[in-house]
Length: 407
Image: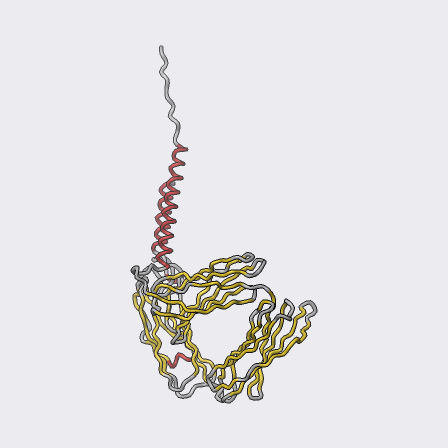
């Protein structure tokens, strides 16, 4: 029995130390970029790939999408990428003079060459982890064409409701654009809608490839607490398009008090988002999404989420996400924190600084997990040995002393 236990412990340790954790390799650079078409645009993208395996492994580089025929890669294989190692490759884009109207994409991906299984057990049953960046080119449509969104956030009674139009001119002609907002009260019980007011925005002029942002506000002091429907109608040169958005007037609100403003380069950093409930009841499944953008290149370098949490009445709490800054340049980045709860959002924007990490090389998340697992295994071994000793003591026969009989 004792021999079998030691064999089991040995096999368990072997599997742990020779396996690869299911953590995707990291890719940094222009993770998501959306550009308007420019004839003959010539641009080179530089990407960094860092390995999150615990043994050297090849990483294949490939592309897919209709835009990829205008890209060339500097390599299709990062050979023998060591754990924690970072290597770069280039993707060169050269657009033609003319392009078919519409949205065109190229996904640039790094894929592990082997499945994530313990060594010697066969890579065919493992999962090859793959991460991608995407480049999007929007070619203009002939004539008049727009892409637009309409939004209004939930508001507390007495605050201003802001109805926002975000318009992108994706046609070849210049346009004069403007918006009309119709707001209806919703009687959910009988399914009726009653218009309560209409608002008009100030017009804007846009050229091909240009965006326009305009809004109109309304004070909700005279509105009843409840749910409303807003219909945003975009008018442009005799044409119109309509989008709808529901919103609430009430007292449900969570405030973002602060968030982490400094992190270290080449390190897995916790991003703390401190929030406070302004509601006198429980709010469930609250989480924050964090978008970090390069201020000059206007590209998103990281999009991370916190784990969901529940908030009690007037409770303050820290929500935590993690940002791996491996390969990220030192400097300031624009950060947008969006808090999601009860079909509502709260947004706070600011700057997060990436500073040099002066305490030596960073410890990868994989190494931390490995260390924790080793500690757990050691504790398990100690527990098993202790139990075995107790069992041996219980099974040991009690010696019987023989008494001498006097003759």
